[in-house]
Image (cartoon, rainbow, N blue to C red; front, side, top):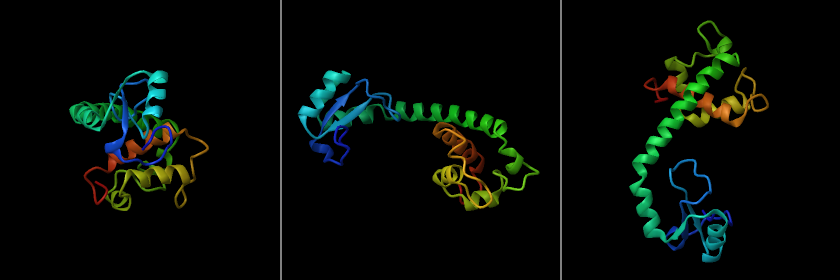
Length: 161
């Protein structure tokens, strides 16, 4: 994806800005692609870093893959803990707890119906069945944290593994 034009590009022909101040959510080292050297240079002067071509950018991505995976695991663990606290503080357990009307998040039945994190996220955001939408009551970060927490409870049960 071309960072400047927001369009898909041929990655092997791209110019990459590496290690810049452009935030990277899934990688320790920012790697941003541009379709033209002019756009890449403009970003370089604005955000710093260094310019490379595909082979070098790919090599860096492979080199840092294990570290990036670890970063994601650590961040998701923190978000999952935050999600647990949110579930308790926002009243989710009134319906989804042991005596609630909604389905228990820990049940095999729930795990069979919910097959992905996306489904959990959509249910929180837009509502589902008798559950109201929370898009106006929670931030996207809170919804993401709740999603990770709920998903962590379904692991190893039914089809929702």
